[in-house]
Structure formats: structure tokens, C-alpha cells
Amino acid sequence: MRAVIIGGGASGIACAVRIKQNSPKTEVIVIEHLESPCKKLYATGNGRCNITNTNADGYEITKEFFESIGLVLRESNEGRIYPYSNQAATVVNVLLSACEKYGVKIINSCNAYKAEKTGNEFSVFTDRGVFTCDFLIIAAGGKAQSALGSDGSGYRLAQMLGHSVSELSPALVQLVSPSKNCRALKGVRTKCNVSIEINSEIKETAFGELLFTEYGISGIVTMDLSHYVNDGRLKSGEERCVAIVDFVPALSLEELRAHMEKFGSLEGILPAKLCSILARQANEDSEKIIRYAKNWRLIITGTKGYSFAQITSGGVLNSELSDSNESLKVGGLYIVGELTDNQFKCGGYNLNYAFSSGVRAADDLCEKANKL
Image 1 (cartoon, one colour):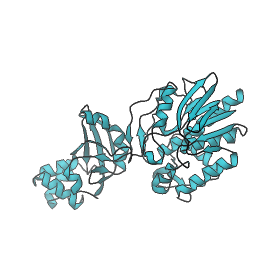
Image 2 (spheres, rainbow, N blue to C red):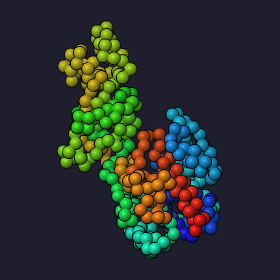
Image 3 (cartoon, rainbow, N blue to C red):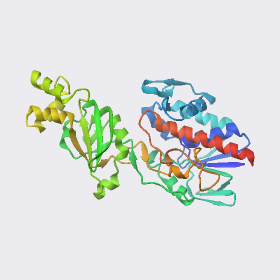
Image 4 (cartoon, rainbow, N blue to C red):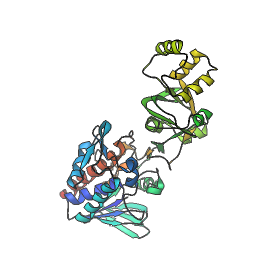
């Protein structure tokens, strides 16, 4: 029995290790187009690798998998789970050591450009020859940060095998605004409510830290809402996007009005530089200042793009995959990780899905293989 995995990132390597844990006699080959696997993992969690989150679906799957290969975990704020070493390199080392221990074959600097199934056998065409297998797992990642391995090639392979791909866009990414106020506020951080409005409809509101930059806005709250912003639709004029900021969600207009009447400004509540911008916009009108503080509108013209994005919004349709990420169109084909249309907020949720989907696919694959 042979399984070929296209992509040596989080989901692909986890899948490979799990297959060998369950079925030691199955030959497992990982095709990685970079010079080494798991390159993107080094950059996750600011180099600390936020593996999972205690609140994430599939958390127990991810936790059990890493414990099975000897990685000790620790919990940080808001349920975030990191390696005990707080170093992403530890995660990579443990994964690759497990590959070596169990006999996973990794072929680096190998580009897959075509995949097909004839009868019960898959053929994967690469620039280093043709690989045949009984089971094929596509774990090639999305389009975010192509320098770290995600170049979007997996979508094409999935389409070759009959799958549909939804509209793609950068996600968990900073947002761009033409407003001069963003540049004036560069470096200012504040915790607030931010809403994304598309064509006059509020899509979602979230609370968190907002960071102003010379190009627009960043911070966790921006990243979490960014999947609603589609560069293509904004550029074509099909959509208009506005970020609406409530800088003081804990206080009502009446409470702000009372504070303003008593103290003459909001500098006891908000950063001085932000107060100055609000006052200038409002022409020093106290009523306008407090209304801007509760409802500040910022035009958004796009995202910072795939080079800055952590993940890709969109992907292979979930309606075409089983709960174990097996294709409902092609038996023996699994599509896992970021390649699928699954996006989550910051905090370890997306990496958790990469690992857990790879493990679930491996478990399902081995169960089917044992019946053959």
C-alpha cells in the first residue's frame, strides 16, 4: 500500500506521521516543492508556533497527536497552546524526527504539476518523475506567503481531479486605507470595537487591539475581520468597504458627553494623538467629537495581499469533502489544511485545523486501507 502526500507543511507532515503510526507497512511519500519541509511553521506565532487552542474544534486530536510524538505543550492566554520550549523550531524538529523514526520518505525540491486517477491508482506527475499510489493526499496549502511554500498550486491539482474552488482572497491580513489619519496615527494602539461594512451592510463586529499604520490598520481585531474584504470585488467597484470603529465600547454616548462636559476632552480615556485627530475632524465641536469616538468611519480599499496574509480565504468546497476530508468525488483522495474553504480567527485555530485535518484524514485512510 502506498500513500503520496503533496505538500510538506503542517497538515501534510502530520498526515504522513499518523499514517505510519497506524499502518507501519504503508509506504508514505511526501512531495515538497521547497528545499525543506515545514518552512512556514517556523514563522507561526511570531516564532513560537501557536499550535492549537483549547477552544478549537479538533483540539483534542491535535493535542493527542503531538503528545504521541513527544512534544510537551503549554497553555498561554485565551487558550492558546504552544510548545513548552516556546520555539517553533522545536515543533519542526519533533515532526521531522517522527518522520525519520517511522520511515516517511520526504522528497524535497519536487514540483507536482498534474494528478490523475486511472482505475484504483493515482498518478502524480512531477519534475522528478511520476509517482503512483493507492491514496493521494493534497496538502499543498493556500496562496498566503508563497515564499514559505504556499503558492496556490494545490488548487489547480484539486480542480484537475474534479473539485470546485471558491473565490480566493488574502485573510488574517492587514487592511489598506487611503486616509491620511492612519498615517498621522501610525503606531497608536487601542482596544476597541471594529465593524466591517460591505455595501452598507455590517458583516461582523469584533473587539480587540487596533493598530494604526502608514498604510491603514493592523492588529488582531483587523486580522480577524479581514476575510470579509475581497481585493477583486473592491477593485472592480462591485463592493465598497468601510471599517467602523467604536473607540470606547464600554461607555455610552451619554457617559462620554458627561465626561466631555466635565473635563473638556477625551484625553483621560483615549490616546492624546487620537483625541487630537478626532477634534480636528470635528472642528473642535464637542458633540461631534464624542460621536466620532463611537462611530468613526474609515474607507478600506483592500488588503496588504498574500505576501502579508497568514492564510487564504476560500478554497476547495467543504460540500465536496467528508468529515474526514476525503473527496466525495474521487475515492481515496483527501484534501486537507488551508487548501480547503476553512478560515478561523487568530489564536491557533487555523494551525489546529491544519494538524487535525491531516490526522483525521490519516485515520480514515488507514481504516479504509485495512479493509482492502
